[in-house]
Length: 355
Image (cartoon, rainbow, N blue to C red; front, side):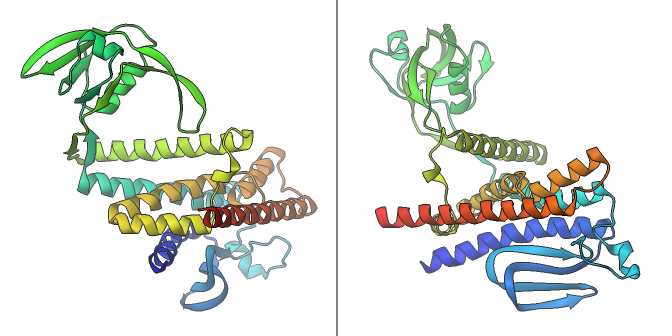
């Protein structure tokens, strides 16, 4: 329990810090005064003041905020504060300041992956055949345990994932496998067959198989700077795509809402990954950082995405959305967030009491 709490505080602290750092740096870049940079909400526990800004850690560690000069357009300002006012900046600058928070969460994930690939390289599953299922295409075509797949239809194969993708993309047409067996190269033609299976989201899909399992041999491959950059971008994009698709399927009802977790679930995951090792723990931070970015980009008032939506409307119509409309939208956004918080806490507690 103690490990989970400490890990949770570290995870949340890192995610919030980078998110608010994005807002802060872009605000300062565009000449907006920042009154408070807070990790957490509620009463100030400790901190320091530098210039105009009060850097603080607050009592409730479930978020954070950057309070900018002139952030509330309904509050009257002294004339000397107007040049540093958020509200008085061009709408594009305001939009970029708001978007910088979730963007920095994506940047954090990218930097984490870059460090992992630079210092640890990547681990690949070698395309070596383990078990061969009877009465399946691979068995009938003569593929054997221990065979190493070197190419499919002339395309070099260096990982099990590449081999699996080649089989999936076949759509059932015969494939020519270049196989290394006992130091010799042979070719074997195999025609994949279609089977009903389930994807990552539990949906029924049709996929092509040849009936083999991996031998489980893993290889550590060192990467240069260029390769690490490419792999970091690819990994970050894959998680972004998976998160967006997951949210879309939740909204459609394809994925059960019981899969949604809150602070308790994050704490449990953080504790588990911390026990597994530093690499797993850091990877979890990157994963959650991308999730936080996507959630904040959702066009819900109160979230960054809601503010961005209002700024986009302002760009189109040439004037800010009227205060009454914004107030109603903010109230609706608060209601949605409170409802969602209650729901995820209910899910978390249900997992605890049913496990």
